[in-house]
Image 1 (cartoon, rainbow, N blue to C red):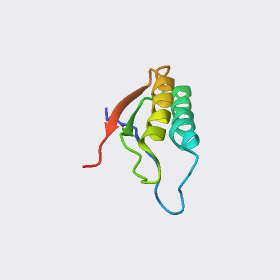
Image 2 (cartoon, one colour):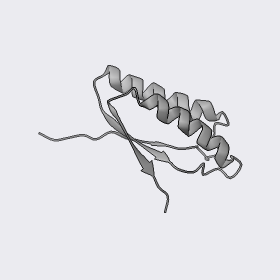
Image 3 (cartoon, rainbow, N blue to C red):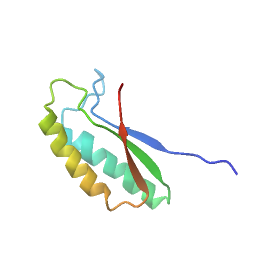
Image 4 (cartoon, rainbow, N blue to C red):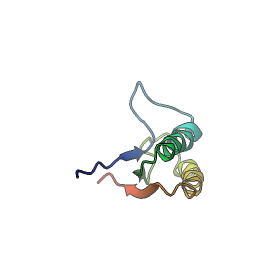
Amino acid sequence: MKSLYLTFDIETVVAKYSRNNNLFASICLAPLAIASLLKDKGLKATFFISLSPKNHKISFASYEFYLKILLNSLKGFSNIKVAPHIHA
């Protein structure tokens, strides 16, 4: 039997056409919607969460605030593992 691993990168989007300036929506709501859909389907995934905002216009304090909300909210999802997404 072959295995399939679902992974998602959770980070601020800095591309010109897909940038979302609403940090609550991009950092919290979207990942929670994905986690919920996966749970409903009985699927597991790993969320690789960026430890920095990547976008220099976003303060680290603001980014950290929303990350804490996300991490606390994900505690209710046993189907989601969290790991750091590191840009070397």
